[in-house]
Image (tube, rainbow, N blue to C red; front, side, top):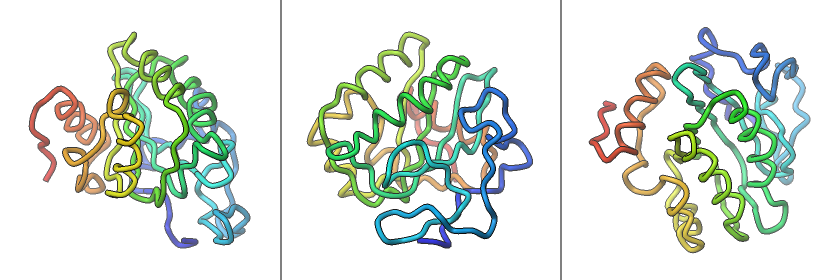
Length: 193
């Protein structure tokens, strides 16, 4: 796990630690010192801690004019023990909502497990996004992760599942990726190749 880096090809366009509106503004990540762990496994130092002991994130891109953010995750999403959704919503979601972001693309291909609790924070976050004509979407969730999410009916609040999986997003610009996902959320066909 220590060599899985957050996507870095958009760094010429956006760096969260240099964005004064970002919850990670002024954060300094080491290039060489591995300190954060998911259980007994060190993770790459470029992942950002936001309160969860097992889930880390990287804000890859934010467009305040188009009102969207793309966030990548790694680890175990555990609402049952550590209430990860509370930390995510309070520390990242609300900070970006205050800056006008209402459309969230959560890249979850490196989320290895999901342990559910209740859906209150998901419902609250989704309602706040909808008030601004926004949404939350999870991309590339593993099948067993999606199954766990469906067991507590998260599909009522977040777009995820088969239509949002196997998305080859890395070769595209963040703007094209967003437009394709927004079209998919609106019931159109995904147009990323």
